[in-house]
Length: 112
Image (tube, rainbow, N blue to C red):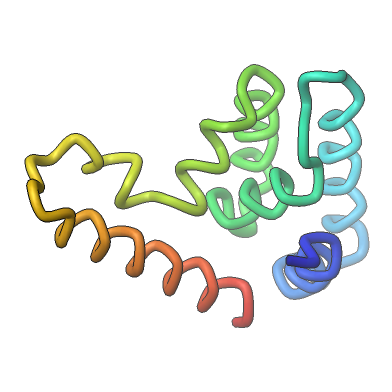
Protein backbone atom coordinates (compact mmCIF):
# COMPACT_ATOMS: atom_id res chain seq x y z
CA UNK A 1 0.00 0.00 0.00
CA UNK A 2 1.28 3.48 -0.87
CA UNK A 3 0.91 5.08 2.57
CA UNK A 4 2.75 8.23 1.51
CA UNK A 5 0.21 8.94 -1.24
CA UNK A 6 -2.75 8.34 1.07
CA UNK A 7 -1.12 10.46 3.77
CA UNK A 8 -0.70 13.37 1.39
CA UNK A 9 -4.32 13.11 0.25
CA UNK A 10 -5.69 12.88 3.78
CA UNK A 11 -3.62 15.84 4.95
CA UNK A 12 -5.01 17.98 2.14
CA UNK A 13 -8.54 16.76 2.77
CA UNK A 14 -8.51 17.29 6.54
CA UNK A 15 -6.43 20.48 6.56
CA UNK A 16 -7.31 22.71 3.65
CA UNK A 17 -5.84 25.70 5.46
CA UNK A 18 -2.10 25.71 4.63
CA UNK A 19 -1.24 27.09 8.08
CA UNK A 20 -3.01 24.23 9.86
CA UNK A 21 -1.49 21.69 7.49
CA UNK A 22 1.97 23.12 8.23
CA UNK A 23 1.27 22.78 11.95
CA UNK A 24 0.34 19.12 11.51
CA UNK A 25 3.44 18.50 9.39
CA UNK A 26 5.51 20.08 12.14
CA UNK A 27 4.05 17.62 14.66
CA UNK A 28 4.65 14.77 12.23
CA UNK A 29 8.34 15.69 11.91
CA UNK A 30 8.75 14.57 15.51
CA UNK A 31 7.95 10.95 14.60
CA UNK A 32 10.30 8.68 12.67
CA UNK A 33 13.66 10.04 13.81
CA UNK A 34 14.49 7.26 16.24
CA UNK A 35 15.34 3.69 15.20
CA UNK A 36 12.36 2.29 17.10
CA UNK A 37 9.90 4.68 15.37
CA UNK A 38 8.99 2.42 12.46
CA UNK A 39 6.78 2.91 9.38
CA UNK A 40 6.45 6.72 9.60
CA UNK A 41 3.95 7.21 6.77
CA UNK A 42 1.72 4.39 7.95
CA UNK A 43 1.82 5.62 11.55
CA UNK A 44 1.09 9.22 10.55
CA UNK A 45 -1.87 8.05 8.50
CA UNK A 46 -3.12 6.07 11.51
CA UNK A 47 -2.77 9.18 13.65
CA UNK A 48 -4.94 11.12 11.19
CA UNK A 49 -7.59 8.41 11.28
CA UNK A 50 -7.69 8.51 15.07
CA UNK A 51 -7.48 12.28 15.53
CA UNK A 52 -9.30 13.60 12.48
CA UNK A 53 -8.88 17.36 12.10
CA UNK A 54 -8.09 17.92 15.80
CA UNK A 55 -4.49 19.16 15.95
CA UNK A 56 -4.27 18.64 19.73
CA UNK A 57 -5.31 15.01 19.29
CA UNK A 58 -2.72 14.61 16.54
CA UNK A 59 -0.09 15.73 19.03
CA UNK A 60 -1.41 13.30 21.63
CA UNK A 61 -1.34 10.33 19.28
CA UNK A 62 2.10 11.31 17.95
CA UNK A 63 3.43 11.09 21.51
CA UNK A 64 1.80 7.70 21.98
CA UNK A 65 3.31 6.51 18.69
CA UNK A 66 6.77 7.58 19.85
CA UNK A 67 6.34 5.30 22.87
CA UNK A 68 4.92 2.35 20.93
CA UNK A 69 3.77 2.85 17.36
CA UNK A 70 1.95 -0.49 17.38
CA UNK A 71 -0.74 0.92 19.68
CA UNK A 72 -1.64 3.63 17.20
CA UNK A 73 -1.67 1.17 14.31
CA UNK A 74 -3.90 -1.26 16.20
CA UNK A 75 -6.39 1.40 17.24
CA UNK A 76 -6.64 2.86 13.72
CA UNK A 77 -6.38 -0.21 11.51
CA UNK A 78 -7.79 -2.92 13.77
CA UNK A 79 -10.21 -1.25 16.20
CA UNK A 80 -12.55 -4.20 16.60
CA UNK A 81 -9.82 -6.78 16.78
CA UNK A 82 -7.84 -4.82 19.35
CA UNK A 83 -10.89 -4.62 21.62
CA UNK A 84 -12.48 -8.03 21.12
CA UNK A 85 -9.76 -10.46 20.00
CA UNK A 86 -9.89 -12.46 23.23
CA UNK A 87 -13.54 -13.44 22.72
CA UNK A 88 -14.35 -17.11 22.76
CA UNK A 89 -14.59 -18.18 19.13
CA UNK A 90 -13.77 -21.87 18.58
CA UNK A 91 -14.56 -21.78 14.85
CA UNK A 92 -12.97 -18.35 14.24
CA UNK A 93 -16.16 -17.04 12.60
CA UNK A 94 -16.41 -14.02 14.88
CA UNK A 95 -12.74 -13.18 14.50
CA UNK A 96 -12.93 -13.45 10.71
CA UNK A 97 -15.88 -11.07 10.79
CA UNK A 98 -13.95 -8.61 12.99
CA UNK A 99 -11.04 -8.78 10.58
CA UNK A 100 -13.26 -8.17 7.57
CA UNK A 101 -15.09 -5.27 9.22
CA UNK A 102 -11.81 -3.63 10.24
CA UNK A 103 -10.40 -3.96 6.70
CA UNK A 104 -13.54 -2.54 5.14
CA UNK A 105 -13.66 0.38 7.57
CA UNK A 106 -10.03 1.29 6.98
CA UNK A 107 -10.29 1.00 3.20
CA UNK A 108 -13.42 3.16 3.17
CA UNK A 109 -11.72 5.79 5.32
CA UNK A 110 -8.68 5.83 3.02
CA UNK A 111 -10.70 6.59 -0.11
CA UNK A 112 -13.10 9.15 1.34
